[in-house]
Image 1 (cartoon, rainbow, N blue to C red):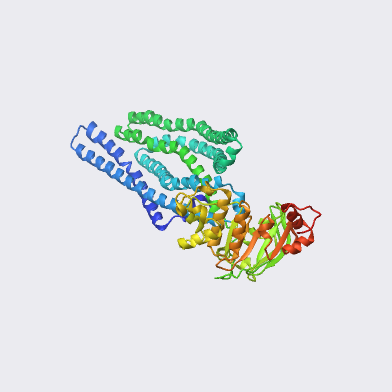
Image 2 (image 1 turned 45 degrees about the vertical axis):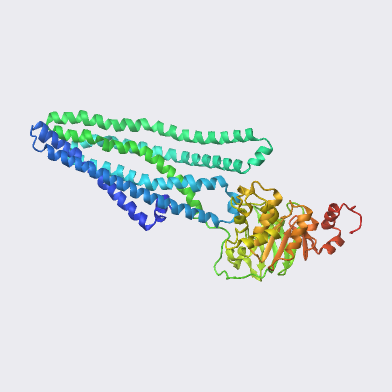
Length: 580
């Protein structure tokens, strides 16, 4: 779909009425521009030249009324367009954010945050600008040109033909300019996206920048991106300035033609002085649209570039979504089964033929070296990604037949890489269940060993924590994240290296508390510490995306494989020693 029809289809009925009324006002007021020049010609011919003052007051009164009425209606037109554009802007922004909320994880893997923010801000602003200004500017230009041309023809068709002789040249110049400037606007939009993405990454990673004393390097990188954006802007301006003199010359040529050829026609008696006044006073109504044409083309090209970026998100369907015939699941027991599951991410196979079953209420632990695919299993279970082959079942139902919201609502996830919102501690813990009471929030904070340090904060549970948990230690953030996961009272609790930043005493306390949860849930624990996984009903060892060992703590120690080696290292045992 083209940007203009798409934007119109996104506009509400009330806003469409406002836009139509505003454009009608623009049409009427453009036609009204002819009234005062016509009255001026009568003033010259019938009052000044004829030396007849009788019609003077009547003509001046009509001219004043026309001017006041036109300005008042133009004000109304602008108000209508502003209301329509702002409402359209609001609705599009909400819709675009909604589209982003339901995109799959792969979409965010492939799109930079800075670029997405640019689409939500700058690109949407150009869509609003088109509604609020460009629409009536185009109507003004077209109506002024057409109505003035018709009026000129009825006044003196000979002089009108002499004036419009320059129009074909102008149209040719405009067509050439339009073709050359479009790729420049696309390049400028990409430079803007790169600059914003770089700034966003730098702000988000400011601690890393400071830790490595890379401020000067980051400044240089931002200077390069800013310079590229500036150069892209200058290229567009240079292109416009290379065409602007020709447009100005052609526009001024009309004034020269009207004066010289119009004077000649007066001498011949073809027109009156008053009629020449019409041409000299209204020549700008033909010339101005020509002058505005270049600016309108610039704005329109920028609007098209921005609108296409917005439309990419607006019309993009997530790869992972509810498929037709999804079953309703009001509750979940927590039975999990992987059947010969393999997964490829960007052509790299990360999991191969994974099969296991976890009964409701049981605990599954997954261990393995870095990059072996542990977190990928979690991503598949939550349908952040879909497997390339094989099936995953929850409660004997393929997860593709679950509604995504219902599937994920029954899962609580706490990861090593914690993201906390700029909100109170209580707000972060109750994020997944806004109906929680304070007592419930405190209860799960205690289970996660977070209550003691939260109570010691300046405002307790009402303390605002910074973006991503700034101001808290790694272990404190992990405990709040675990409390947030527990607060959902999930049927499947997933802990991805959740206790990696905790001391052994706190870790042991949490493990004991997890055994006494006020609800029943299946637990999946990903960890590197033997102490975190040894009590699991089943332990899987992943290596290179494959399950190489499985069993209980005692069984895996007997195998003398990866699990035994890890156990020996963490307990300072010789590799050839016993298992106790």
